Each structure stands twice: as structure tokens, then as C-alpha cells.
Image (tube, rainbow, N blue to C red):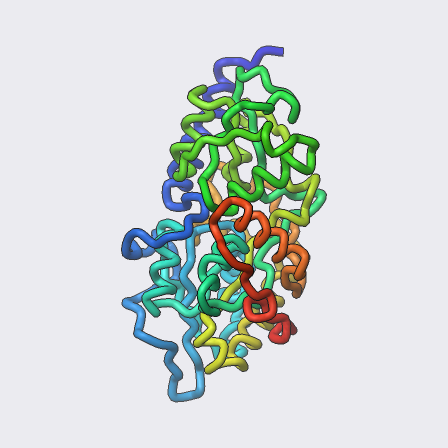
Length: 348
């Protein structure tokens, strides 16, 4: 059945709004490029960050979190609103970043203590020495809720994985997007030689190329993918079919962990309460989503929030798989230590 012009206009409005949101959230990059920008409207105040964590007169420790406006962080904002961090004598200071590259620069410059990142970027941080420590999953793909989608553009004629053989897929090269693309397609039966990609680093440009027909396929993260699908893109595969590949992480700097182990433990205890609240009732958080720019306004109330994982960290097998992929791509020359990079002892 053909889509009415009114329906098409509605769908493209969704994409337009999502593009605006995505302009602040490019796909994960590795190398820092620019200084952090000012906070998005509604983001909890993040003043000029001190050089290191500070302790208040009542023993309250400030944790500076370099944060993109991404859905993965919802439990943190819920925990802030509910007072769970305050109960742990923790003051969470959100240090906004407009891109993953800016987030990485904040961490490397000592202007933030923690962040949400991924296993690919973890390898780059720790390839020479242990710079960051992964202490928890932030979000994981599940069989019901995908975190990354490989989409075919409307009018591309591609309806299944076999249709992607030899077709350039828009990705962000050398990042978790590239890793997910390779692993999902290989899991669906494509040989490495069948997988072709084209580097379009910015998610806004990648989505525009897909919707405009410049590329026939692209790998797009949730929830941005939801608007593309509403506008006519076809889901070829996602990590809902292979959830072991899709995840994001909570990481602290190794220096902060060594000096403030109790604070890390308290941070995760508060995060856990935020997760429990979100998973118990996903209809209560529209104001939090809107205030902190975690979801495009057009999707608030319409998009089905995913399930957030309970206390857990990546397995050694998951870490090794990403490590092996990075070495095969020539991004690493030696293995990165799982034992030094991932620490589950702070989990509640």
C-alpha cells in the first residue's frame, strides 16, 4: 500500500527532529578533536570543571561525568532526580559533550572522571597503559530491544542481508559502528569479502545520505534509527538478533578509581536504583527525557523505552572479540588486558 503524502510529511518531520538531536550526538569516535561545548538546555548545571574530584565539607564527593545527550544515560538522570546519588554523598556534575570526540578530550584532559563509552574506545584508551576502567554496562541490546540497526534506504530495493553483498554501507570507521556492522553481517552469513563500507563519520550526514539515496544502507544507533524506520527505511538486521555485540559502558578514569573506590561503589549503587525505577515503570520519565535531551521531542511518549541491564560488566569473551576485531583491522598491534580494563568488584 502506498503511503499518503500526509503520512510521508509526518515521517520526515520525525527524521528532521531526530537529525537536530543527532547533530549533538555523532557516532562514537576515538580521537578527541575539540573542546566541550556549553550544556544543552535543561541539562543539569555543569560549571567549569575543576582539575580533579572535590570533596565537600560534609564528605560529599563530586563526580564529573562527561556526557552526551544519549538515551543510555536515563538511569543516571533518574537517580539524580530521585536523590539516590545524594544519599551516597555523591554530587554528580554533568560535563556536557557535543560528540564522543569531545567526551574523550574531557577525559584525557582530566576535566571529567567518568563517562558512557564502548568497548572499542576502551581499547584505544588502554592500548598503551590502563587509562580507564569499565565498571558496569550502561545499556545492552536484548532480543526485544536493539541498540544498533543496519538499515536499507527507502527505494534501495534491498530487503535482506544477501542484498547487502558488495553494497557500500555507511559507517563511522574505526568505531563501535564499524565493529557492529562487521559482526552482525558475519553472524547473518556474509563473508568478510562480501562486506563493503563507506566512511561517513557524523550520524547526521550518514542518516541524510541514507534518506537521500546517496547510500543504499547505513548502520544507525537507536533511537535515531526509529525515525528513519518511520520514514521508510527497512531493517535488514540489528543486534536484537545478536545481543552479545551491542552495548555501552560506564567507565571511570583509572586515577579516580584508585583514589575513590568507595565513591565508585556508591555511584553504581545509585545507578542501580535508577535502573530499577526505569524498568519498573517506563511511562513516568517523559519529563526527564525531555529536560535532558535524551530523546527527540517527536518520539517522547511514542517510543518504547528499552530494558536497562542490572549490575553486570562485559565478559572476557566479549572483550576479546572486540580486541580481535581491532587487531584484524590494524587498529591495534597488541592485545589489551581485560583484567586491567574491566573491574566488576564495584557492582552492588
